[in-house]
Each structure stands twice: as C-alpha cells, then as structure tokens.
Image (cartoon, rainbow, N blue to C red; front, side):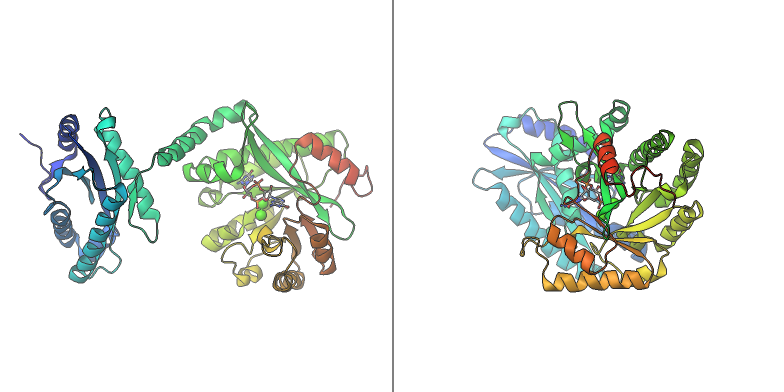
Length: 443
Ligand code: C2E
Ligand code: CA
Ligand code: CA
C-alpha cells in the first residue's frame, strides 16, 4: 500500500524517493527539477492563529504547489511545512527560466495568502536542483538534499525567495566540515599558532602591548585565515575550544618571558560571543592565572562592539567578572556596526579600539578625508572625556599615524608598525622597541 501523509494527501518522503528513483531510470529527453519549498514564518502562523489555521494553510499551500502542474512526477511532505515536488522540464526551458516561473508563482501565492490569512510576514522559500540524463546515477536523496541546501540559502536572503542549486554550495559545506572535523587534531598537531601584533604608544612610538591573533597553517604551508574559519567555529560552538587554546598559549608565553626575566607587555586576546551563553570563561581564566602565576594586568580582553549590543546584560556581567580578576577590557571594532555611542557611557570599558574601517578609505587611497578626520577626532575626544583609553587599529601609513598623534589618540596598531608576526619575531620586535629596555613591566 502506498504511504500517504494524512494532512496533505501527498506521498511520504520514503515513498517519494522510491518513485523518484523509478522516474530517474525512465527519464527520456527531458530533465527533472527537484523543487523544495518551505514557508518562512510558518511557526508564527501556528503560534498566532493556532494549529487549525496552520493546517488549513498547509493544505492550501500543497494544493497550490501541486495542482495544475501537468509536469509533476511525484510530491511529498518531507516534514512540517517542507514540501518537495519533482517535475519534468523540457529541453527548451533553461534552469533560470524555471527559477523565474517558480519565483513568480511564489510571489503570487504570498500575496493571496497574506490576504486570506492576514499573515503579513509569510514568505515561500524554494531551492531547485536538476537531474539530467547524464547524472542518472545520482542518488535521489542527494538531489533532494541539494535542493534543500539551495532552499536554506534562499531563506537567508532578503530579496530572493528562489535559488538554484550550485555545486559550489556543497564545496562551501565540505569546507565547513573539513574545518569543524579537523580542529582538535590540528591543534594537537601544532597547525594552529598564535601570532602577535604590536600596539604602539603614540607619544613615544614604543611598544605598549600586543594582540594575540590565531593563524592556521596546513602542513602544505597554506594559511587558512581567521575570517574563514572563525565564523564556522562560532556556528559549531568550537570557538570556545579555540579561544581557550589561544589563552593558554598566551599565558604560557608571558610566564616564559617572566621566568627568563625578560621584559613583557600586556597581551590582549579576543573573546568570542559564544562565551556569553556559558560564562565558563571566567573560571577557566581564574585557573590559568593560578596555574601560571602572572599578574592580571598582563592579559587584556577584546570584546567586539556587537557583543555589547546583542546582549548588554550578559556583556556587563562578563566585564564585571574580568574586572574582578584585575584585567582590562576593550571594545573592539568600534564603529564597524551599529555603534551605539550611548553604550560607551553605560559600559565600564577601559579601552576603545576604533575599527580599521575609519582609516580605510578607498576613494582617497588611505588619505583621511575631512569627514573621516572629524569623526575620528570626535570619538577620541569623547573617549578622553570618559577617561577611556583610545586605540586606533589598521594604521598603515605615516600620515595616518601622525594625524592620530595630533589628535591625541593614545595607542596605535597596524601594518605601518608591524603585521601580526610569529612568537619569535615578536620577541625580537619587543626587545628592540621596549621602553627602557631590560626592565620588567610593573603596571
Ligand atoms: P580583529 O580582532 O579586529 O583583529 C584585527 C584584524 O585586523 C586582524 O586580522 C589583523 O591581522 C588585521 N590588521 C591589523 N592591522 C591591519 C592593517 O594595518 N591593515 C589591515 N587591512 N588589517 C590589519 P586577522 O588576524 O585576519 O583576524 C580577523 C578577525 O578574526 C579578528 O578581527 C578577530 O575578530 C578574529 N580572530 C583572530 N584571532 C582570533 C582568536 O584567537 N579568537 C577569536 N575569538 N577571534 C579571533
Ligand atoms: Ca581584536
Ligand atoms: Ca578589531
């Protein structure tokens, strides 16, 4: 007996896959489009109008998607509001034309549904993949998961609700899997290293600190940069493991310098937003301070502006915990997002790091425009009045550095002084640039 879904009358997913396999086998001079659709904000309809209304909408949606489609081969409800349809497509129609037809159909449905169900936010999101005669060996479930992947991308998009599958999409996913599955091994094998980028004191152009930045170098010498793997690790939650690794390396480095009686500057580390949910970071850091016996003022913490904006309460708790340990906290990337100036007066931060966007002006080729100058000098002035130390990142030219001195920005960091460099190079840099060489920093 055929397996049907009670609510929609469509096939169950297993049955659909069997039928699709048969259809692929008997395919002639046409190709098969796998059209995978779901309703964005369906949960909102259920929550607001009740499940009965939700069920009605789903039945109507199924009718709209499947009826009047003479080319339909089979259709199923995969789960909840996810409907997949397999349709014949003639050789005269391009993939893009198929996408346009479905896109238009989705827009019409949205309009009608919004009127009938007073659901203003409702949106249909569709992903489409194709099976042609050449890829007859393709497993039907893979074709569906390709369409589903495109659908997920459609769901993220603001404008478009209908996206064609592209093999590069799976390349991206493969890369993510490669990153998430190899992190622990890569740490154990020494592929991840902490680099250091000096921070200079504006008035003396001497080193005043450094930022620890992670680098991942594969055995073939190729670097994977943080901008690529950090977002992936943030998604998977493994960023906590990475951050802890960096913190331990930094503590070990500072303790080593102190043991050898060599001068050292405070090192700042980045704090991912993932720590806000757990707050275990505080006990982890306390145990590091205990184990390595270093002064709290030698480690500083950078929290990006977004963290403060997303969850001010938790951010306040975290800053409080870090301050109780005796460490300093800075607001990183200030000005890169929706910076709220009022946060500056509400949050007890010690240092404000102006984002490098202020200095990177493509139009003027890194010469600061008059408008940039006004904004930067206002922020620095404000920081001074609030007794917050100001640091500008992304300093690349002597002109930029001179201007920052002129307006009283206290610290600077950027390629003009040094790129992030491996530990040994950083030690040499420090030894050359340390104020009153030889003395151990005290406060
Ligand atoms: P960030 O915290 O804003 O770090 C500053 C970034 O600016 C670094 O990129 C640095 O190499 C780059 N930079 C420094 N000076 C200049 C300059 O003069 N010009 C230009 N164009 N860029 C400059 P990087 O190392 O690629 O790191 C990117 C981001 O990845 C960091 O941004 C930070 O958010 C994150 N990240 C890096 N290491 C870690 C880490 O250990 N833990 C966490 N949670 N995040 C990290
Ligand atoms: Ca930073
Ligand atoms: Ca930054």
